[in-house]
Amino acid sequence: MSAILIDQEIVHYEVLGRGRPIIFLHSWVGSWRYWIPVMQGISISYRAYAIDLWGFGDTSKNVARYSLAEQVLLLHNFLEQMGILRCALVGHGLGAILALMYARQNPELVDRVMAVGFPVDASMVDSRLRSDSPTDLADWLLSRQPSNEAARSDAPKADAQAIQASLHALEDIHLRSLWRVTRTSCLQVHGQNDPVIQMPRNEDLAELPEAIHAILFEGSGHFPMLDETSKFNRLLIDYLSLPSGESPRELQLKDEWKRRVR
Image (cartoon, one colour):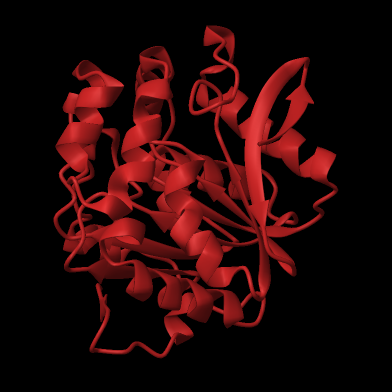
C-alpha cells in the first residue's frame, strides 16, 4: 500500500506503469480499486495513479475534510507532493465533479479530463445516495460478477458522512457552469442504464462547447469501466492519444463499440 501525509493525515493511493501521468478519481461507491482493469490497460504507455478521497477506502476519515473544496485541495496537494506538473484526470461520479472543478481552477495543470457519469444538475443525482448505507449502495449498483468484487469489497470502508457531505455541497455549486464553461478538453462518458445519474437532455448536449464531447455506453450502468472494460479502455487510449488541446470531437468513432451522443 502506498500513502502520503497531507496535513498529518493519511492519503492512500496506488500507482502503475510509466509515462505521462493519469490521475483516477473514484465515485461515491467503492474506492481506487475498481480502476485496476483500466490502470492495467494503459500502464504500458502511461503512469496511472488512483487516489482514495477523504473518507473513502484507506484514506483518513475526518468529517472536517469532506467538503468538495477539501477534496479538490487533496488532489492539488497530491499532485504537488508527487511532483506532477501537468496531467490528465479521469473522474467518475463524485470524481468527475472534482476533476472538472480542479481543471477550471487550474487549467494550466490539467491537459484533459475524462468525466464519467457527470451530473449536469444536482437534481439528476438519485436520492438513494443520500439515504442508503455504502454497503447497500454497492448491492444496488454492482452485480455479483467477479469483475465487480474490488468495488464491492471496498464500499463498506466509506464513511457515509463523506458521501452525504459531497451531495449536500452539490447544491452550492453550479454544475452546469462546469459542463458549459471550460478551456480544457473534456470527454464525457455516460452509461445508458446508470440508475444514479440521469442522462443529459438533448438541449444540454446541444450547449456543449467545442472542447467537450459526449459518448454513450449503451451496455453500461454506473460503472462503464467495469461493465464494458475493453471498450472503455480503448476509448480512453484513443482520447489520451489525441494531441494536447485537440477537441475530443475529432475522435474517430468506431460504430461497433461506441456511439456518439449529440
